[in-house]
Image (cartoon, rainbow, N blue to C red):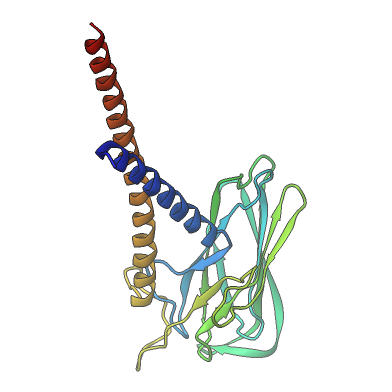
Length: 249
């Protein structure tokens, strides 16, 4: 096999591999997720939760998002971050049993938060949005918060991301999940410092970043090598034509 043919074939293979990796990364993340970024979600504490909402429909946009907070782990304090073009409504429900918080009896907890887009605003095809809440006090008797979420499109389509995690496999419509770290011995319940980090979160982010970088590198390398192969092939064709022309003179 000639050199230019080898490089041309290698370029095609790398380009295909890179495209497959990039497409695979997109598919794997194409559902509503909940992330705690840049701080620690600790049992008994407070944290910021970011809900990332990809638009999966190629013909319509997302205009409404509702998160349902677990009644078995009531959160008495939930605040939303303002988003241009969106209105947030917090719904509370009466607690069966009041909660004592620093000497104050709390009788209500937040049951849901709903964001609705103003006319002309939406998360369009190929886009994603992020919705942030500050929430607490986080439960001390679980290490996982499952937060079912409902995504509504301007076409009228409604998608419920409400399936709990299953061992070994990912559900078709998984609910967003927030992992809670155990409270350190002697720790308090104050809101976390913004610079706090959690090793598990950073490990996951680093792994995701590494996968994404590798996929992009493969795609770019495939295109570059493919272009090199085409260039070598074109050069060989020109040289061959010149040789034939000289032979006929």
